[in-house]
Image 1: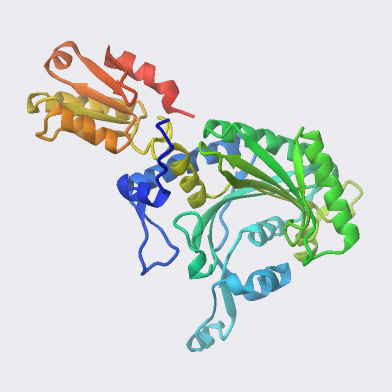
Image 2 (image 1 turned 90 degrees about the horizontal axis):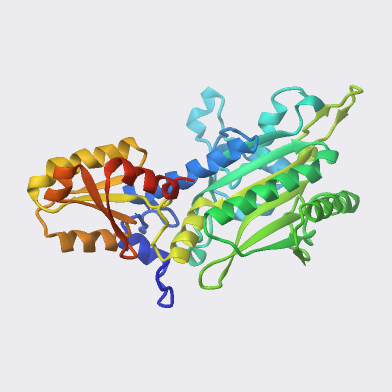
Length: 408
């Protein structure tokens, strides 16, 4: 990692590296450029692979739902001022729409319960795990907007587990193991945990909260978490564990969460059939590994100051010809790296090599693969890393050398 004493804000890095921009016509929204969306997809694909390996099935729920559902869940009472809501046009009344109130979703949990409720569930199906990259909207005050850190449109890596109360402890422990592995892969080795208890304004009665807090605390202890109690900071429907990451500058970022919920299954009438044929409420565990993908990308950019490790870089390798005479060989090498699974840029401009090296460095591309007359004659490639290391290798050896660093 490069020197971070002179800190650059993620918004400036976004412009310098051609990742994204924002403009007043889309307040709190993000325009992702090709390089930025490549980074987005790397992170999304990585989390998707991790969640699939942890037994989660990916789903997709609507972005617009009737206000009545949000009222029933309790989100309307809690978040109405921050929800984008509208009335359907009365001109559509003949189609059965009328003046029905609708709202963009600020979160995905009520939609996940609808999928759970779409069938009669048996205890044999539990735990049932759903995951979604949920596109959410919240009407944040304009003064609160801050680049990717606070937006009005964002994507959450939402996940929910429906399970019995006896399954809470092992499910939380499994997810804690997943969180530790993911954060380490992204370069965050210092993780603190907060245990957030019932807020003053909440849904559910005290006995329900007593059960939920006791169950989540037991799960946290079973997972070996060293946590700090945060009184009154739980969600309105249940207590939560918050995972706080420390970046290269020692700054703390609240990231993943685990929330235990006995309230929403009651409000939205979620049921399963137990071994005796009785209908019972499942426990619902809300999970997020990263939280908002936009905010996590901002964290990554500031943590690494834009100089991302090889596996995360939007473009991992730039293949540069020394003279136009090697352009065809450079194209051949670039194609070979693409076939091997790398994200590759090609620089065959009529520029001197020092210019190409500088441009690759300014774009924060981890590896420069230089091809000149000697490389073309030998079927090799000269690799240059950002730290100054250089090695000339046959293409197959170069690919084998880079692959372990490039994949997660």
